[in-house]
Length: 390
Ligand code: FAD
Image (cartoon, rainbow, N blue to C red; front, side):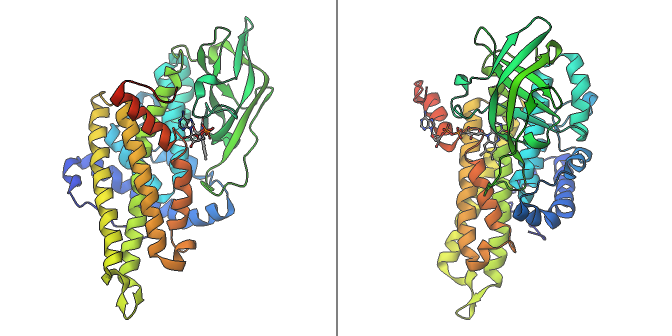
């Protein structure tokens, strides 16, 4: 929505610092200037606006929590969350691009990489000179990544990589891929695979009705010789990729809030302007119920995000706490998008309003990074001590 007004029913802004508020405003202005005018057309045409990657870099939206000495922002997790909120208010596909780059590519290099790897890749990823992708999901292993078939064999001078990955955000445009594969001992290892390595290709997945402004593809490895120095030395086991997912899911919890706020803001304005039966539709109780419930859910989700951000800053946020936030907030955003769609009547299905695009985008967000039900089962395991999904 062009003249977007951010709902803040519980004065949560009082909990933010001056710096947080400044960052949010500058990202909001950036999205309004650079994203809002082009996003509908990009989504309708299913084109990834690649020129935005460098602009995202200039705005500090790529890996904002990575330290400044690697060319990134060195910001806290509340700032990161607010950034993702504003980006996804623009479009979930662009937030996906930023989440992948920051949490799934820069984070593992920073957490599990060698100093040489950090210096080689992080500044270029922070500036947007390089675009990265994260390959965990395979055609036969989505919710159960531990079963992955992609393999590396130690050939002395290099690792020989074979297998394939599916549904990989950014893949068709990516300069580097963080790839998770099993070694001869069955341990999951992380590798930095670069475009141009022989036997490595990234075919695009077409005909998506969701995240149309994000590019998604496969990663295919046919006897790729990956230099030994491209192995992430400090990642061992499923813990490696799961650590990255914790960071990305945290950003998604905030991002979904942004999409929900945009739908709510549009619905509120539309309801006040649209006249039926000689009155604004906002005067009907059933419409007020929809708006009241939207504001209630957004307010609850804002509090969850803020508190989770403080726990992240203190290094105390657990996987299950992040699951609760990702699951709740994406579900709440989807429900708000659906209600807002109805509230806009026939106009709600057109590109005149952002609603249908948000709604379709959120259908991917509720599935990727752990489906809605898998996060429920993570919570179930936390409560009972019994895993119902393994
Ligand atoms: P499945 O795992 O086959 O699940 C199908 C259904 O079964 C779901 O409803 C699920 O909840 C349910 N289910 C599965 N197991 C259980 C169980 N034990 N109990 C109850 N229900 C269960 N992956 C990456 O690695 N990198 C990316 O960048 C990336 N980007 C993506 C972008 C898009 C647009 C999409 C759609 C996906 C992306 N993914 C990515 C993949 C995504 O993470 C997977 O789609 C997701 O994990 C689900 O896996 P799946 O699609 O194989 O579904």
